[in-house]
Length: 52
Image (tube, rainbow, N blue to C red):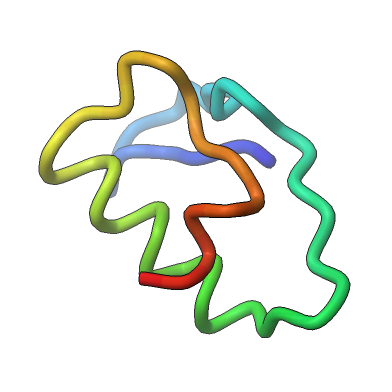
């Protein structure tokens, strides 16, 4: 998964990507990504974090 700052040209690969979505929705993944962006994700983002 890649993310981009609003208005920026660069794209960044999210550490831990790709995340399997089996049994989870894209909305759940979006919430995890927002949380990681706001609070940090030193170890990357994992599928078990989709339960936020």
